[in-house]
Amino acid sequence: MAKHAPVKYVLAGAGISALALVVLQSLLAQRLERAQIAQMGPEVAFNLKLGELALDRLPPEALARLSGLPLRVGPFPPVSGDGRLQRQARLLQQELCQRVRPCPPVLPAQSLAPGLWVELLSPLEPIWLFTPVGPAQRWPPDPLLLGLSLLTGSISASFLFLWREVQTPLQQLEQALGSVGRSGQQPALPERGARVVRSLTGRFNAMVERLASNDRERTTMLAGIAHDLKSPLTRLRLRLADQRPAEADLDALERITSQFLLFAGGGDAEQPVQLPLDQWLAELTAPLEADQVELDLTPMEARVQPVALGRAVGNLIENALSHGQAPLRLVLRPAAADGFRIEVWDQGDGIPAEQWAQALMPFQRLDQARGGSGHCGLGLAIAARVAASHGGGLSRLQSERGFAVVLTAHSLAAA
Image 1 (cartoon, rainbow, N blue to C red):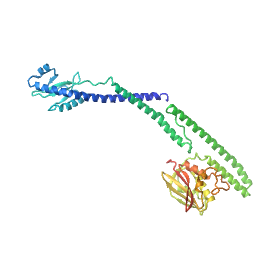
Image 2 (tube, rainbow, N blue to C red; image 1 turned 60 degrees about the vertical axis):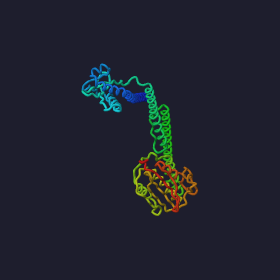
Image 3 (cartoon, one colour; image 1 turned 90 degrees about the horizontal axis):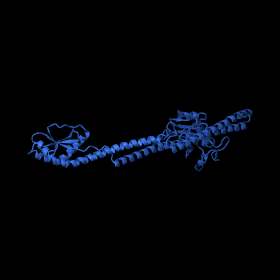
Image 4 (cartoon, one colour; image 1 turned 45 degrees about the horizontal axis):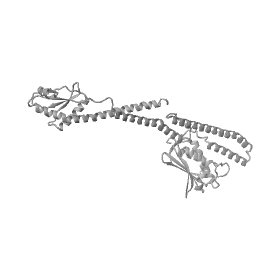
């Protein structure tokens, strides 16, 4: 199909050239027609005046024989239905009306040669003067018009080629590049367009396939690590059931393993679900004690990945409980463009503004905000990744009420 693309645009250019030639030739013919009628006007007006003066002394037959004017006697000359002759009759009548009084009738003549009937002012019976007009020039076309039409067709075909074969595929490639790295696998783009664009699209598809393969291998590897560690951890838990410090270490190891798996993208394939966010957040915080958290939730719905978003909010709540001061305050508010924001407030000092960017980096633990058993520095990084997959982000907020981490997101249906 790509081999026939140049032929397609050549045919399109030829068609545009032919159409342009027809239009330009028609416009030129009309302009020449007006010029011809304007040139005929004085001559026909002179013949009318001469004939009307001579009819006072000579009969029509003698006048036609002596002057050579083609005259016809009678009220009904043969009239043609040709549109071009009718248009020329109107133009000639307009010219004669400016020179002759009263304005004479002009009719298209039905004869072997194209011409017009012009009525002379006669005292006895109607007399018509036949005025020949030149035929319309259809072929060969004017060389200048032919050149202009070919130039128009060439430029139009070039623009059409650039738009269909270069601009449109490049726009699709730009959109696809913008979606690389987001949740979900990027589908392969169809390789179409110019040869260079097809080559670029093929390299993009190969890159996306390599990224997807690496992501699958990474997820499989981390899932295998988590699975292989789960059995020894369970056995150790049973053997050390009476030793609480060892069991706490096992809980920390299990939590770190699950955090590693989540940060590696273990939840990217989760299907979005439409759910009421206020009820969902209330259920998420149900295991907490009543004096640990206060809820301020605006009723609203959104289409989200509930497991991933729940882990992100859970990390924020756990960080606030571990490093802040209770009671926490969980706030849900709508945001612009079908979005929403979840604020987790605590009474602690929070993370300083100058250390916020470092806190969002994976495997970073701040002395003032993070630390302790089972914390590997991925809580905020996971929350930021989940927020980004929902078209939002993570930010900090400090006021006299305390410190808050704000997760902004959008409904995946709207995104």
